Length: 494
Image 1 (cartoon, rainbow, N blue to C red):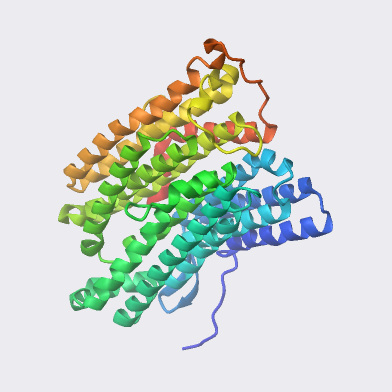
Image 2: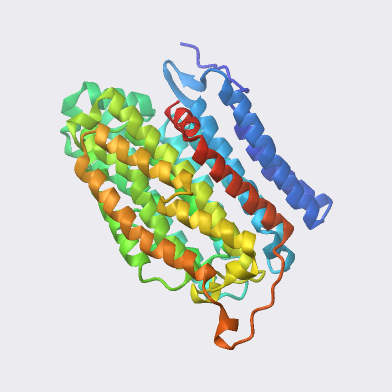
């Protein structure tokens, strides 16, 4: 067998574009030394990545770095969807970062470079065909975020959040790598499809304690990245301590990365009869604890952080159907995987819109503040308040937030198709609990503000135009996918 491999550069084009964006940002910052040019270079690279991913993903599945039938890079429709979503999220976060960067407390070149590096990890993650590529891509996505979280100079909360995030992520990565090493020791394979075939065709391997421990370590290590309970404690403090645009990226791109990685190993590598019960338990714990704790939150970002934990439970819920035999049929599995990916896409759009609205309502460089400080904000900024309320209603799963409504319907339908009616009931009960804090925050936006209580009304400042554009686009996309959810489902199933 020849050791010389041909490389499909077309398949690698999205990764080239994402990595090239990081290099372009460095050159723009070094040669031009103008903040506007640096941000424009990062934005242009993100747009190019979206276009390149869409063009490559529109054709047939492309594979490269293959040894026999095992390939380390598999770019199909789902990988294109993941790459495009990561690039769009990066573009959106760049837009809402305008006030932060103009405040002068954050180095523009480093900020844009780190975002581009993180985007590169997300693009590679969707196409990873083996555990090593998957873990390296996930770390490439996560490592820049340690620095981004701590970029708020002079803030003790920001420094504490960065250290907490770093320590927990290192532990999670260590567990995942140990699980991958044990899987290799037990099976002799690292490619996802080969692992799936080995563990599926040889039941004696699944009975080995070594293989059981390996599967558990991989799943639990990735559960840290998703902020699933009981591996969630880092998320609220990290989100609240980070600058608002970075918190938005953490809540969307970072969580999407963990979901994509977990889906890849569950769908293609690990035995469903082992992972199904674990994921069902994680889903129940995550959505229940996240919703109950969110009820008591008074700080806006912490409320959104705990709601993000609960949303991770809804994303994991379809995979819990694999715990039952009915959920492991071919059709039920396809429905479950598509539901999890589609819910993740719906969630990140609505979450980005919510954070963009929060940035628009807060002073430049400020944190998220408290819910009480947002009282009457929609009266002072009607369009921003309406977009914020729409995002919150969508996250709650109520009309007219059709994206969130269809997302929850998709999850419940996948659970019913998999025979997991009890888990569908848990999802429904938790969705009702979530209404309380989402509607409380939405109501605060339209409540009588300080002026009604005899205090001076806050000065009305127009949001930065970049934030307004990001909020408009995110809201428009959320409305669009709400009216055409089948499009996302079809791409997720591909």
